[in-house]
Length: 451
Image (tube, rainbow, N blue to C red; front, side, top):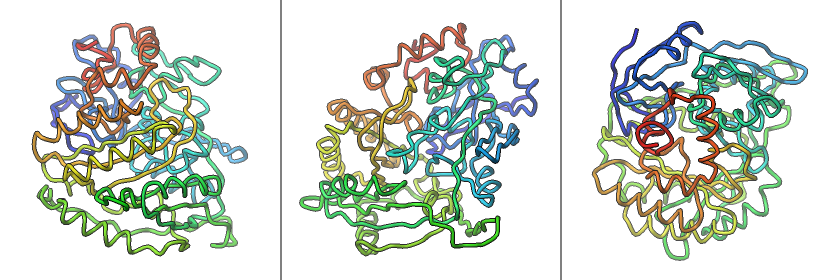
């Protein structure tokens, strides 16, 4: 019924041995939840969270990719109901040709809807559309008792706001109803703006974000001096109808590439990344416009199916922080200086502006700016460095994204998430024996041995 497997998140750090179950029916899933043994359970979708959110070292991991059916669709209102194991890719490929798209999407389409809700994902449109939870009408949750509860803003509201962003700790998201948006094409009109430094990037965000549904910037983390934080902003809107006069929108199939083996971690070093950054920054013409397919804009890395292998056998840590609006510039300036001085360049570095915070008790975003970075785990020196980064984030009242984390200390986590005690109270009510627990929740002291 289960297999003992060594398994990791997308960052391949950490890798842990778990009891992996692959239930195919609801009755199987309920039996696994209600089974009286001494192991904790946590659900897992497609394994695209980076760290230990969906790991359960020495305990049970319930893989839900078989629960991927579309249940209903209201075409008049654009409301889709589907199971939690449905991948965003499946939703896009079925509904985009019919003129519907996801209201919010993260940087990969290879995530399940349940996983996206459990991490309350955000996208390039957070400044306008908020997190995915803003567009979830209700969800069905399998709780520790085996009961299935409907949760929404009106029904079991406290449990709803504990579940969105609750990293799977309140129960298993069986299905959800989500409101899709209507689009008239499968392409995005993109305006590329170059910022010579971080201050200019902030100014461009301020002056243009209200004009565009989608807003993101690539940032050069190795630039110093007057060029500190130089960036390329990529501002986008869905293209107006021009592709077809029929009711069917064509989706272009992109060629997929594979990284055949784990690359040596030395491949990504200050010299190679500095060269890439120079080339990339100068490859864009300031103020240029281009119409590109949705896949290239929203999911550029999905064309490399296993790009995580670029970081080597020891894996990598993605580090995403948000600073509040009033400290964003100072906090990011200090962080960029620290990065350039440390000789720890990030191959992927993404800057976005966030809109208002929602009611999710463990949701990540609040109004301000977020920076996402990747660090290869080459040796043990990365861990004290990240501890220093955490201290910097705390000084500027920032927060770390749990979907990416694998190293945060419990005291730091508690300081960053002020609604934690409220979350634990609701979890205790719905899961009094603490059945739903993960490697992350125990590491952070939310559940289990570290509570």
